[in-house]
Length: 55
Image (cartoon, rainbow, N blue to C red):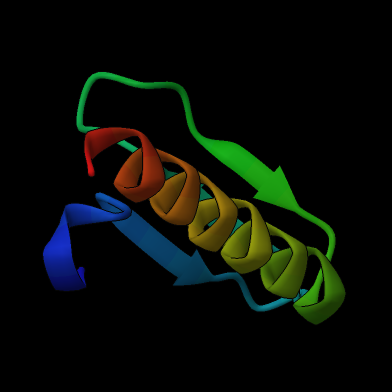
């Protein structure tokens, strides 16, 4: 994954996404595309919040 934001994201045949943040972290099951968009928004928020604290 780009910039190590996720370790893995795999689309399952049933439309669910299997997501893992780090190799040692548990796998999260996301219900579908909307849940994947929500996860992307969470990651962006975390990046922006961290970036603002380091300035």
